[in-house]
Length: 396
Image (cartoon, rainbow, N blue to C red; front, side):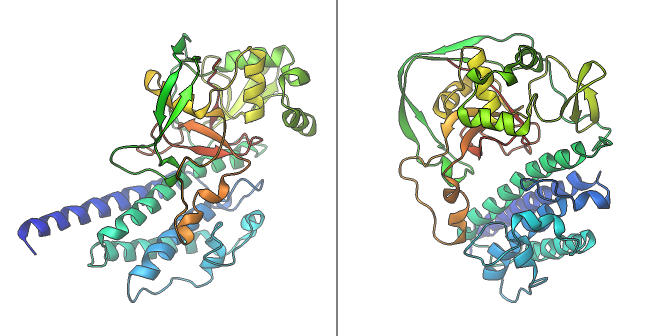
């Protein structure tokens, strides 16, 4: 082996150990403001207890990297595969999602010991001869997977605390301060053939691959997100009581849930308040709207005589506006790009199996970890969910 190769190997190991440590430590930092009782709560099926996120992301590295690739590795606890497997049928049986909140054991301290154990073994692995170039893509996937769960951690923590009758603050520090939206302009794009999809260097998920051409008609899109003030106008004209603005399924959702406002909004003592990570606060009218589902986004757009952009329109236009404060609903079903092919084995279950009954969101949010966003990122959720940091950008 030449000196240059040794230097290259040394640089590679340093890169991975530093990146691994930074991302793993961020998950712990997110949980520092929590009390022990907060770690176990699961108010609804879509919310996972914080301690489950910490265990599941650790399980990913143990299951996909250490067990098959690090000779002599001893599993921390053989029962954890059943507890922390999320949806990987290839890996075996698991606790059903609705029961994650029933896991008083393993304890929070057990899970932190699990993280320490796996982190120590991963550090040994990253500094060993077993870290090959072929495993780097799997390691990158694991780190991006943890970043996805960091966003879910904040989202779930907000739901847990935001449904506590006392509305306790997650932190007293300002969480991602927002600049008020002052002026909205309409951007126009001409019909033509455009290209969308990931290209270039760096990481992306498999659902972003397959850069391809799309034909778009003339369209217009706003350079700013919809504000709380604008959405309050929709509430004031009794938009939640007028079926004309809603999809049929959306109108069913309104009636079944007696919906009258976005998630976390409360009309108290004659004014609108909302729960934030800093506790219950009066709504800042010129801040971007947050926590609405696809039904609400579409109904608002219909009331305004506009629509939601398709994901292709959004990606083409995204170079011309700032994005990243809210995940933005599109009018596109989550479907595979041309040439998409699921990988073999459990990793192939990561995205492809969810390409049905889901709607695409684009952008990122204030909860998205730094370095985990790009304009080709294809997030996706069912149409009725509000708990993610979602907002609206209008098109026509």
